[in-house]
Amino acid sequence: MRIWNADGGEVEACGNAARCVGWLMMEAVGRDCVDIETSAGILHARRAGDRMVTLDMGEPGLDWRDIPLAWEMDTREIFLAVEPDLRAPGCVSMGNPHVVFFVSDAETAPVNEAGPVIEHHWLFPRRANVGFAQIKDPRTIRLKVWERGVGQTRACGTGACAALVAAHRRGLCERKAVLELDGGELTIEWRSSDDHVLMTGPVAVEFHGRLPGPGPVA
Picture 1: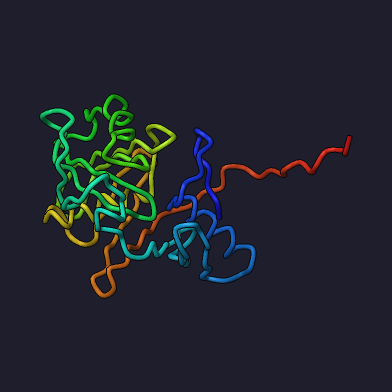
Picture 2: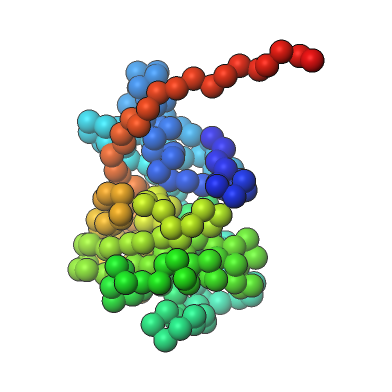
């Protein structure tokens, strides 16, 4: 699987796209689990119910070089402040770079104002996806995401995984929580037995279509 964002740039990972591709593959071959090869590694998808898919995202990258950052920092809480209410975010790689700010109210977070500034901040050589996470309780997180090369989106699977990992590392939530996004809910678990991150959520068919074939040779 290869993914291009709206700006034409190819990206390493997309959790929600992988869940959808995994479901289509399972429907096509009549299996309950499939593997998806991406530039960020092999992702394992399995059925989790009627039009529900669990995706094993593997281990998160937590070293500063995994993100990557411009120089060495503790990724639990990096030295970065955009404004008084946006400071000391956590960083996680889910095959792609994420920075997660913890906010008191995700609905009023300056996603469209701060998102593009942070995405292109010199601290992130490959730019960054920017999450704004509100910890509602240890099992519930409200999340908005500014995606690298896209802008604010209704859902971001890798962003949800990164937010859960970043929050748990700070002692703000448990290893399993429901992530509430504008487009719906995802259940994220950072499994203690092997440190793999599991993402479970629904899929829906939007439309069917057919790509045109190659045109006539001039």
